[in-house]
Length: 326
Image (cartoon, rainbow, N blue to C red; front, top):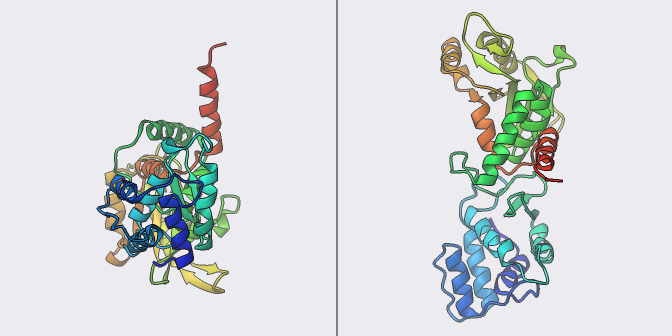
């Protein structure tokens, strides 16, 4: 990935403090800054902005974690630069610094913003793809654990449509999928076994199409289905319908088949249910099926720093109000 020289220089001036919204850094302090970023760059005494711009250009040459995302270490440098703990007295919320940083980023199609955790994030303006390594298995911060618990409460009470509209659609948009279209549940005849279809552009610009079959509760393989659970045999029929029916993509003006199907459950997908479905599908179809249960949703939602659904956020505020003594 390459940025225009003009924008690299503007970003370099933010790092070294030639931009008045950032603290000035001499040669030794530039080296110290990159050490804080876990990089072994040592300033060689040459022109400060030119040397820094070259280092930023090097970081941009690292592999992209996904399409439309900036390299991880490049984003890490910007995040270290914009730590709110380092805010000066005349810019306590760093809004002025953020505005200056977004000028060169915006010309390249990106924007930086602060998340609920007060850390800097960068996203692609066109696709809303977040430039951050979303490792769902890393340890969570106390604030992330609290948000996760609030989302669990929401999943316990939400409807199937709310699961799709308020949780899954924002999640997949943040993960880089686009043209996300929800079929809804008002007209069952038009669903053909899929609740959502979407597309994902590979770095080669090839496009894959995905369908989602979402259920609110637990998916199991038991003979007697309880009210809150769904039998995997029902999902089997819906997945076959999903993979066998074409969808119309208005952007290409063509009908296409679903390449892969997500089975998403707001509860648990039991091991027996996964094995039963795997045994029913042939080897071709089996490679097209992916599973996501509640744990996957919670982990991905948390590390992607997506705002909580409105009802969950309102409930959190109510709990906060209850804790205030009067």
